[in-house]
Image (tube, rainbow, N blue to C red):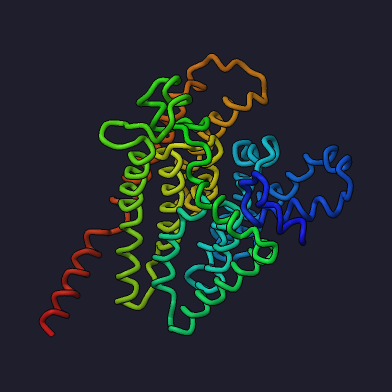
Length: 372
C-alpha cells in the first residue's frame, strides 16, 4: 500500500483504479523479472470487462427477452475485441462501467453514481457521460435522502480510492497529474482519424501544438467548442424527455433506446471534434450503439462505428500485416465514416422521439403554471 501511495511521485499518468490492478499484478508475481516476462497477462483484466456487456444481456430479463442470442454480434466483433485482445489497452473497463452506470441509473441512481465514480477513476474520459447520467438521475431521484446518498456515498468512495495517496502525501501530485491530463499530449491528434484529418494535412496534425491559433481560437478550444455544441444538441432530446417524465410521473417508453443512442453519439462526438485524441478513444461508442441496436433492431450505427474503429486501430497498429495502400485505410475515408455516424445518429435523434409534441406539452404546462 505504501509503495502504491508513492507512485505519483514519478511520471505516471494512469488513474488510480488501474494502478490498483497493476499493484495487485505486482504482488502476485513478486519479482521484477516475472513482471517483465508476464506483463502481457495484464490484458486479461480488460478482456474480462469485454464480457460484462454480454453478462448484462444474459442476466437482465428485459435485455434477454429483446436480444436472445444477439450477444454473439458483440463477442464475434473483431473491432470490439481488438482493443483488449490485440492492443492490450484498458478502454473496455471504463466503457463497461459507464454502461452499467447508465443501465441502473433510472432504477438505482445511488448505485449508478457509485459505479460512475469507479469508471471515472479508471479513465478521466468517462466524464463525458456525466451530463447524460445527471439527466437520468434527475428523473429517477425520489427524495433528498436518496440524493444525499449519491453525494455522500460518492465522496466516501472517492476518498477510499484516493486513500493510499492521501496517506503517502502524494495527493497534490495526483491533482497535478489530473489537471494536466488534458494537455499531456498537446498535439492536434494522437492517431485518431477525425475532423482534423478532413481539414488539415498530416504535417500540421502531428507536429503542430493544439494551443496554436486556428482561425480565431486555438485548435484545442475550437475542438472543445464543437464538442460542447454537438453534445448540447445530442443531449437535448433526453433532457426534454426527462422533464416530461417528471411532470407526468411516468418513464418514457423508449427511454433506453434514447439513452444508448445519446451515449454512443456523445462518445463519437468526443472523439471526432477534440484534439489530442488517441485512436482507441471511440471504443465506448461501440458498446452503446450495440445496446441501441438491441432495442432498435437496426445495426447500422453499430456496424459503421465498428468498421471505422477497426480501420483506425489497424491502420496504426498494422497487426494483420495486409495492404494498407487502399482507400478504406485512408485517414479521410475513416474520418468520413465517423462523420456519417454522427449525421445519421443526430438525424435519428431529432426525428424519431416526438420532440415536437413534448415541447408543445411543456409550453402548455408552463403557461398553465403562469396563469395559476
